[in-house]
Length: 140
Image (cartoon, rainbow, N blue to C red; front, side):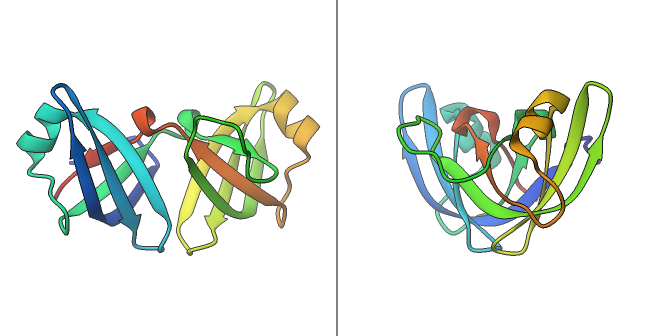
């Protein structure tokens, strides 16, 4: 199956914490970075997600926020540091590509105002921020 979601990062499930309706799935990406996804308990069962299993973490570029450094005092726990490799500005929004410190690529779409204010350019340090509820999972 082909998807329009640009960010498809493979990894291995570290832990699954189930609840009656929702579960959290902790994943070690192939790059070594770790992320947590919040999905339905039903999805965990239907997809056969288990510790040690292979998954891909899927993140729409429009759901990836960027910061110039790690942010404390924030409920978003998925903070992935990297370096900007390219910026494609537009009239209203910009596409920013990062090479995560672990070597995987990630794309974010941010407003032109945010781009101008934060000053991202090739070579800039950045941290990608993604809520656990915005990370979908796929299995092979």
